Length: 386
Image 1 (tube, helix red, strand yellow):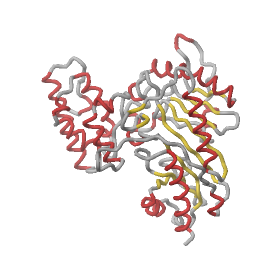
Image 2: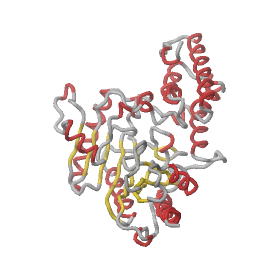
Image 3: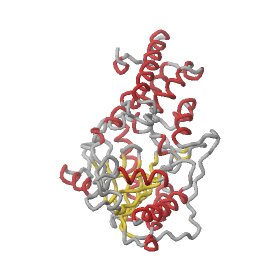
Image 4: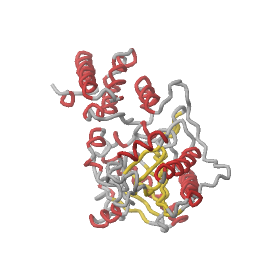
């Protein structure tokens, strides 16, 4: 019987529970045969064979399976797991801690995350590197206490979360102006949605990189439950100057970002920090944090800062074959990730434009990420122009 067809319930007896665990361990072994680098399968198997894993009751086993399901369904995953609640990182610590420290490169097993935005008067203007204005973006993932993470949210909770954020968006509009754009068709018993977008308006925002694409088309998010109930509880707020954006209902409850075309990386970095302080000062808004891992995110890859700081740069020599393969080979030792201009799994620009960002998120300070982006641009352009 396929693992996904097993009858899981919180009141199953020990025999049924043991049978399910055996099936899941066997499935992990099969996944590892096709992809030995699937961290989810590797550490899921170890965890379920440990005393902690064997001690899970039926209810917690159900939750744990939801956490690892995407890595089992999608054998090509390199990480392959998502937390369903902020407490899962502690409750299933015997699993998650190994995944996290493996992925983020902590061989000591003892590192704790430290938050620090203080750039100490640094100058990160890329004009000094011979660059003109670049498309710059810095974003962070955040989740609120009092709610499940998106993978465990049902339709009603997604709507409740959106309505929780509406007063906060009103306060942001007092400072930054702007508008809420929502995909939620209706608020159920609470009536119509005054911020509802048309399909054409939504597509225009996607094309402008203001809104995120249909998540239900992503098999990894679908297996994790993160794209469930699409499009309920999804949307964004954007400021009048178009520089500040908050997504709600994506992989994390909130993706808070600043973007603009310019040369000073601190324009977006410092403005994002200011906006985060404004959001956190709003009554009833408290971000979920972990003592060891910093800000809690659905995916362990984003824990800590939750930050991705990126720019679009032209590297026609490194991409003259029409792909980003060589650019990735060059950028990997520099600690940089390379994406297409539309984000992950999108093509590079016809003129050789790619999106680059520091890869690290956890056990690194925010100020260090923006510094590494500047250094990365400098080193990458030296290789491009050699």
